[in-house]
Length: 528
Ligand SMILES: Cc1cc2nc3c(=O)[nH]c(=O)nc-3n(C[C@H](O)[C@H](O)[C@H](O)COP(=O)(O)OP(=O)(O)OC[C@H]3O[C@@H](n4cnc5c(N)ncnc54)[C@H](O)[C@@H]3O)c2cc1C
Image 1 (cartoon, rainbow, N blue to C red):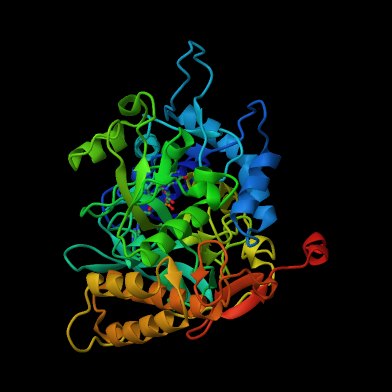
Image 2 (tube, rainbow, N blue to C red):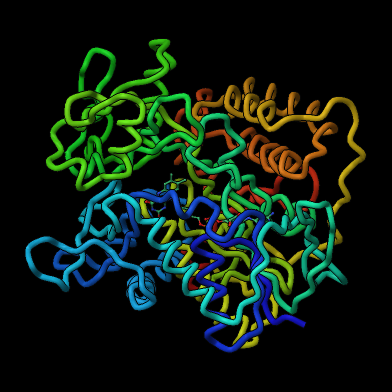
């Protein structure tokens, strides 16, 4: 039997497979599209890490991450991220990833960019703004050089849970042939769920499959109300929406309203470099109040735009704009799901045999709002830790990280898909509901409408990806309806302030409403 089965081939899954093979485990990787298809290759800005640069430190990266996370980060998980992150970036370079270097002849120094929420420049990038593509290229080459079995075009549709333990997965190929793949340990690295929304930067693969599978099996899932909307997606017809990276604002680009007024200085001391949630909300409020569908990003002051941001330059040119002369139309787009499958500090979930890392996981590093360029790092760091823990013989989870306060639960075989009834529900129908009623700005009435409409659409969700979108969307709506406050990426128009009563997570373990699990007090945290 396989030692490890990895589901997904983005930064998290590939890193895990390469490391597992390197440590001598028998490992297989299943992925629903081609190797390399997923969100990772679209990443632009880069990877944040405190790489012994003057003026930076893991402590400073920690405090920036905690500030962005709006009170819900798990500090232990963030400490792991920021202290182990630099080693993982160096290991990626050793594996062959080529990051941009400064052009002053110092071949050894990596070029560092600054992005929203970071107090210093600490973001390494590749090909200017093609960081994800370079990471994916390096990791795909690395995994192909190992003994890892690779199964492309295998859609994983459920976990195999036997006697409360994950024993493998069920997959189906494009011919409709289903099979079971058994393994001692299963690592979910299946990415995010931006496809819940009609306006998203995420590719078609990001349908929340891992989170939905975990939920159907009773594995704890949390923080799904925290869908991060990127403030500056290019406002065009194409989908996924081309992203105008935060690194543009790091290089001096400025947001302007319909009258040309630069407004972010009135919203936050960091102005255009405020954390993403603040910027997205500021834009969404103006769009709503002024009945607009976009505002503007003025990047005309950036020197050498085509050289520094070649991918963005090409995307903008493709719609007939020249960023060195024209302001660029922007609006928020669903970008990153901070929540997902709850894990301890090693990626273990609430059932033995099941692990999660990367965007599908809720490890606590992102809290209520992910800090820019922390997610590639999250995938690198926690994939490595999960594999080390697996190979070192860890069984089950610890009460660390997000799992502190969440009791291990008896998992069960996944709920079977109900017989579909009525006309087939389409992805676009689910996206329209979520976008209209559960997007950047929400209130009790819109969330109630969204819940009712998704309940009507659920019986027709015969397509497994649409079913997963309904599953995760329903969880998002339920948690968002229960959270009577605005925090991080969750904005309730009827509860505009933050409330200490909601310092905790909404955790789903069984069908139905989520349970509120308060964060541990400082004394409890010290004891555990
Ligand atoms: C446009 C864009 C720009 C971004 N820029 C940055 C950035 O600059 N810095 C940063 O840190 N982050 C950035 N992000 C976020 C970051 O790219 C992602 O969070 C990260 O790549 C997720 O990696 P992952 O391995 O968890 O998931 P993914 O890369 O999405 O990979 C998931 C994999 O799982 C597979 N899969 C999914 N479901 C199944 C299933 N049912 N069965 C089998 N296989 C399945 C998919 O096909 C895919 O291979 C950006 C995201 C986008 C969309």
